[in-house]
Length: 302
Ligand SMILES: C[S@@+](CC[C@H](N)C(=O)[O-])C[C@H]1O[C@@H](n2cnc3c(N)ncnc32)[C@H](O)[C@@H]1O
Image 1: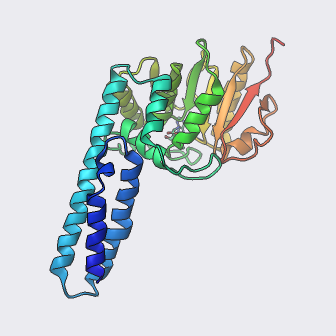
Image 2: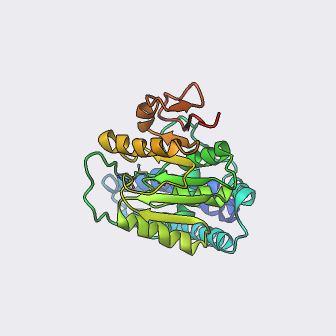
Image 3: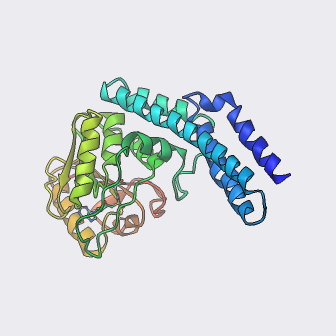
């Protein structure tokens, strides 16, 4: 009884021709979740209860084969998207439209919800196509470990920043470089990442070179010692806390004496930034650390 139900579920997915269309990334993501959490989990839980292990093994093999076929379609999709980015055919609005097409019918998290969604799966497939590097440096306690900014927050940043040709964007604590690469790809703005861990920085450099992105640079340095003399728009996904955050904000204060700067924050660092008196928050709900927040220095020319 259970076994025939499982077989029917696998057949229903295998016979759904829509899942094999390259554009149906959302459908495949959902189907792969079903295979993992509904079909394979059910098979594993039956192994201890049923005598007929050979049929269970056969069903598991069928489910895994189907999963591999779906994964291969996604991998080809990522290769195809990377190749279009490399030949400069997919940037700005065209990139955004392609993403919308592949994610049609997906459920997304709201801007103030925690976690990752299908947009992250697609973006990770495009940008993080190499094995993740191990850290080689010991972090100080105030240095926050690597964690990616959810892609929807980066998209929101690009929409709100209205970059101009004279802007230079910095991601402080740039990790594997996804923020800088996406921001540059979608807006064309010069993007620079400052990252303490050399292996993360190398990873980001290799990915942006493979995607042939122009005007993207990764600087391997402690954010306390980098040169921000050309920076106009800064982003922090809580890269550091305490004294390091204070030191970096003092450097940005000095920069703000020369020109107006903007700072976007995400995560708990926002609660420290709202207390800084040389910055003004652009929106009233800036105390919510789960939202993208924007601050501006007072324009000294006014
Ligand atoms: C929360 S992660 C954010 C990564 C990246 N911005 C993203 O969203 O994908 C914080 C990053 O800051 C880096 N970091 C921590 N302290 C740093 C410092 N003092 N200078 C430069 N980078 C630092 C960490 O190595 C880590 O990659």
